[in-house]
Amino acid sequence: MTDLEVLRVFCGPDGAGGNALGVVRDGTAVPGADARAALAAELGFSETVFLDDAVRGTVDIHTPSVRLPFAGHPLVGLAWLLRSLGRPPRTLRPAAGEVTVGFEGDITWVRGRAEWVPARTTRRYASAAEVDALPAPPPGEGWLYAWAWQDEAAGVVRARGFPRRGDGVAEDEATGAAAMLLTRELGRPLDIHQGTGSRILTRTYPDGTIAVGGRVRRATP
Image 1 (spheres, rainbow, N blue to C red):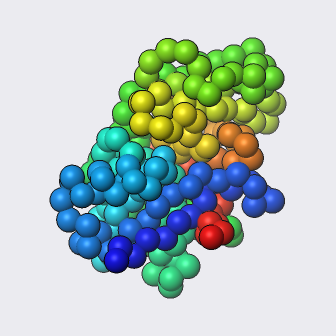
Image 2 (cartoon, one colour; image 1 turned 135 degrees about the horizontal axis):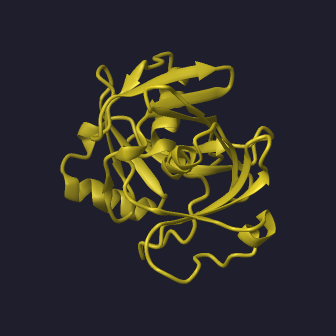
């Protein structure tokens, strides 16, 4: 039987929200792209991550329909889980490249590059209320990250994410990769309030890398 952990990633300070994540701690138990794609589709989470080498931190990330070279919420969730098991990683290695990991209190951080993120559209709306009123998903094709300033001076954003891949995920509760793209676009750290209660924090660095951070909890059965 596959050793599967289910987490909620990017929870709010009160424990609300968080994007469900499947973590296969022994990726070798599910060899081959087809078997992994089938398991990710069966689970139906926005992403499932397979840990292939715990020492090197090599990982493989799948949505219900595609394999991703990089994604924020699987890496934050996996880093938190390994720390909870007494093995806090310094780096993780998805297909895109080496990701630096850090921990500050109850926030887990991963740091990478926005150019690793598959193309998606960020669209600004006039108010948080307009973002809240969008149907899930809005009409159109392709990944949409809808956002509005909630408090521009403080860097607080209201956002919702819509994959529009046709794979059953109508809305992504919390999306680290899209948060990285928006951070690069705006050129400043952000405090993103996404979905029904999720929080994503971001930071920028002089070398062009961007960190995304958040709180993680185990999903209740």
